[in-house]
Amino acid sequence: MFKAADSPYLVPDNGNFTVNSAPTKPPIVTRDSKFYKKKLDKVIKELQVLQPILYAQGQHAVLLIFQAMDAAGKDSTIRAVMTGINPAGCKVYPFKQPSDRELAHDFLWRTYACFPEKGRIGIFNRSYYEEVLVVRVHPEMLARQNLPRSVDLETLWQERYESINDVEKHLARNGTVILKFWLNVSNEEQKTRFLRRVNKKEKHWKWSPSDLQEREYWQDYMAAYEQMVRTTSKPWAPWYVIPADDKPFMRYSVAEIIMNSLQSLDLKYPAVDSRAGEHLARARKHLLAE
View 1 (cartoon, rainbow, N blue to C red):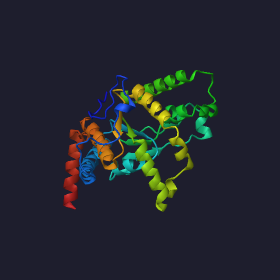
View 2: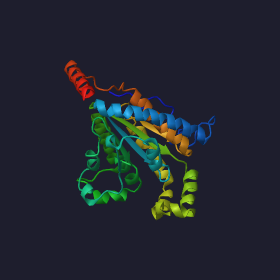
View 3: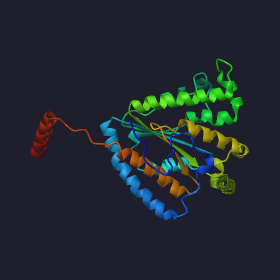
View 4: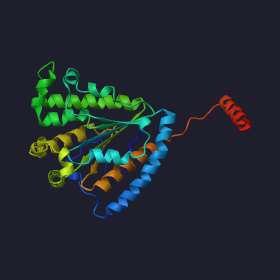
């Protein structure tokens, strides 16, 4: 089974993670944004080499899951890190408020068909983890889910963690590399970015009145994230809690983890057998003779 790439932001599976221990800013000894943009460019070039081999080999799928508070930079990070990746081998799935049809099924159902095929990269912009984040902060949402029995809320969350862990372990056993990123933005930096949205006309389309409302639940969200990460960071599906107050640093950190993870798979183009080699030799001879 896949082994998590080492990183200072890898959450161990010992259940001891705390939000207070997770930085939102880069290390004190750090570089300016141009430095990390150059580093990112180098990593992207390596990803552009690795992705076609992943596709051709067809033995592993890659599932990247991004969770974050609003304005942390999920969209821009996905866009920046996946620059130049062949769209035939990569697809992004944004998960927003579930539809009535989706609510008629179990909480994992809408993601089943979105899991990537072997050889491909699937990206979840938000995911089934919303069911232990937003729904945990706003348990009144459970009323629309028509649960089959009355259950204590703490028991319900634990059951959902178990279901998530079971599904992710099943995927990992069958060749899916799962990397989960919490882009950890501070309350202060979110405020700064919200003000930018309010003050710049070209960013008004990003604004929603609910953004301001959800800030009132900041501590509740931090508690939900802490329990989520603590309970579901597993060797086969690790969480990486990435400082998100500095976007260039954040993007580089995410890209480096993805690159290191792909490199650890020992990817190789499929070898051709001797008969295929003979066919290729004849084809080469024929084409050169035309």
